[in-house]
Image 1: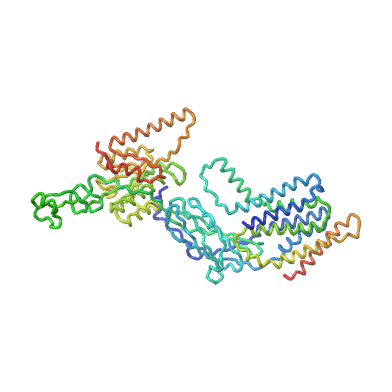
Image 2 (image 1 turned 90 degrees about the vertical axis):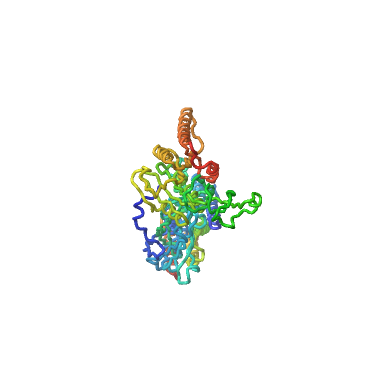
Length: 181
Length: 442
């Protein structure tokens, strides 16, 4: 239950963080916030319903029961968390460039997905301690790439954006290769 | 439905109590797919919008995806030990699961009940605990299932899921649980219907004739050969001649339970056959406790029977006859074809039936005309009336009158019909008739 609560809180925080300020996103901002919030809520409901004991249905279940079964199957099968993450990223791109804000958003999104991963399992959390070092190094890499993105571009023109992306990718690759894993 | 006689010849599947070696097929986990989607979306949006800070979103996901690696086991051994292989409806069976060969991978166990079993909330999934596994790296967990309906079946399957430490790769494999015999839950019943004349066998029922029982029946004059200890000294003093106490003989009776399996009406788990079997077992329990001989006859497409017997062993024979089908059988459903051992002369017949099949009603009449004491427990699960329109109500009324006519005609022959809905204590309707005797004389 605590895991699901963490998922709900992180999902809400991520949605709010990517949507502020709401005025600067234009018309697609509103629908995207709604989609992201719906995906987060559906994901939380999926987690709460995952362990529910399904009732045995007779051969000729009623229409309402069949509809409930169909909704349950839909809830369990669709990738709600992926939908939430992508809509949050799209929402972030609607704002003007703000690297430190995006960096923090990346931390929140990854934490949200890790919390979902933890809540999905009945396995004790001690099993996941092995990846703590890797999480720390990936957080360092995230700070490095964000720092690179914050460096003001020296060039102007059509290629300047591409070069910035290449610089960020190169920083990420170099950091990744240097990882002591 | 009832197990066929051929079921007896079928070999029982291997039990999963022996360790089972399972080959594992690893796939990318749901978590890894989510991270991959996030990384792809971050990179794509960075390229499309030409904003390098979005690469930062992809960075942690890519690191977790590509840097994580480790050896994964190709096979594991699973041992499933059920707490029981026989149980009554509504009872729980615990399964002790031991998993070995998984290394440092996390193991999650989930029980999936099949038709006829129910998951127990909180006990249907668990992580294999290494501390409980005996210290050799094996993981252990105990899960439970509730048996919902009678029959011999595999109550479910066990899903064994393995993850690496980062949950990037997973594998799921299934183990079929061993077969379990689930017996119908005997109805609560404690009122034995006793016929007027009882067979000449020692039992617990007080008969009308005198004998060596413990029930006082009267006083008579002493004759040579009477035991001195039975002299009634008070009566002797009063009458001036030696008087002795007489006692009623205690006899047992033969009871044949006749289960109508020609039609099976009602919701799953509460059909007329389900009610019939639960009622029959409740009645069998009562009579066997009273040292009577109890037999069973299934009246279906063909007759199956178990000759009357007594004692605890006979009760388990009855259970096996119901679930496994260990019983004699004859083709056709003619009661006259039953051997004398299956339906002893003078036996009390207690029939459980929804009274929907005309052949069964005819059989009841036939039994009564052959001087059997017959008591019918009507087990049709009708419930509340659903007729809304006038024509439906009329049809229902006609049907009710037809059923009433059947009951009346049976009553005229001396066959007592009592109703039982499967939920109440069976003793209540039977007890009222117990005082009147199972078969009234015309």
